[in-house]
Image (cartoon, rainbow, N blue to C red):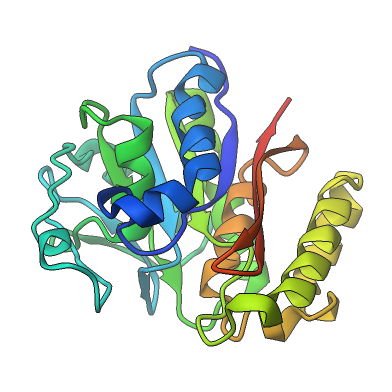
Length: 265
C-alpha cells in the first residue's frame, strides 16, 4: 500500500447534495469530490476526517463501530434531517490514532458517542456513495491554536502509510453573515493569498499559515477559524508535500470564492 495524500476540502453549505438547487450551485465541488477516489488510486482502509463542525477540549477520536448521524444545521427542508450515511466506523484505527496523539504529547480521548457531522457525511457521500469505506473523525481542539493543529497533523502522519486517507474538511471562506457581492473582494483576496502561500517551500508555507491572521481580509473571511484549521491538520500530516489545487469556484452564494487542495509527493 502506497503513502496516501492528504486533502483540505471546502465542503460546501449544509446538506447540499440532497437539495437540487444547491447541488446545481456546487456542481464543480461535487466533481472534485467525486474525482478523489481516482486520484488516490486505491481504496483506503478508512477515511479520517478532521471537520470544522466538531471540536472538544482535547483532540477527541470517534470510536463507535456504527457512528450515528449529527444534523448540525438548521433551516433546511425536513427530509434533510432523515439523511443516513451508513459507513462503518473504525474503532481499531481510532485506538491507533489516540495512541499516536498521546505519544506526541497531545491531549486526547476516545469518544464512542459522537456521530458523523455534515462536514464529514456530505463529502464522504459524494466520494463513496455506497458507504463502503470506514469513516471516523478527530475533533478540533477548543481555541483553534494553529501550532496545536499542525502538531495534530504531524502526529497523524504515520497513518498515511497505513492506508488511512486524512481529510481536513472546512471551507476556505466561512463568514455566514457575509454572502452576496460583499463577499467577492474579501474571499478572492484571501483565496489568492492562500494559493500563493501553499506554493511556497514547506518551511515558509508553514510559517505563513501559523500567522494566517496577517492575510488580507483574514478576519472577514474567518470570523472564527473553525473551518480553516482543518487545513493545518491536513498539511501537518504532509508537511513536505507539494500542494495541488483540486477545486476552485467563484460566485458561490452570489460572490464567494472557494478552493480545495491535495498534498502529496
